Image 1 (tube, rainbow, N blue to C red):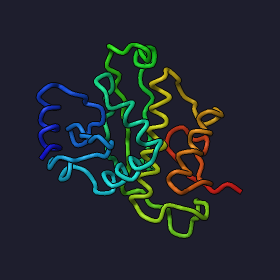
Image 2: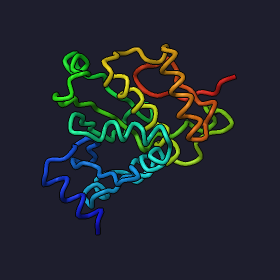
Image 3: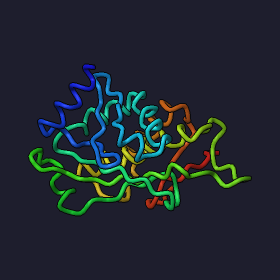
Image 4: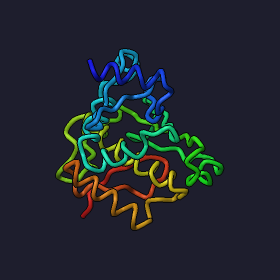
Length: 197
């Protein structure tokens, strides 16, 4: 009941839009766990939602959710089954990058997720510790793409993958998810996970 009241209060007071899924804000409780509206349950893939929950259970997930769950950010979560990989974070325009330090300005970002993404049969692109389910895949996509958005929010444009700080942060969250050998390729259009040898 408290969660429902807090959710209604947030919408009536114009609270944070932050993570927008199926046209509505995702509500996060005091433990930073997401709660979904009926519209979100009907208008988004189960894998997208359970992937968000799985990522939110990690320290890195909670840190980024706490940071972005504020009025100055809006992250539009778009599901697109034609996306080539599991996810992609579009680089925002120059004005958004420049406004990174302006807490009065609303910064909007687009996060594209493909909950239908599957590894082609017979192609092992994962390390031995790999996502076993679509929820695991979407958790990794949330983690990787939100890391990109974190860099955008600091005014850092692409490319991110060659940066040592990006790779260090990615390795930390990949370990938290249980995939310590998973890494990003240098393809900035989408996450690509490959085994490190």
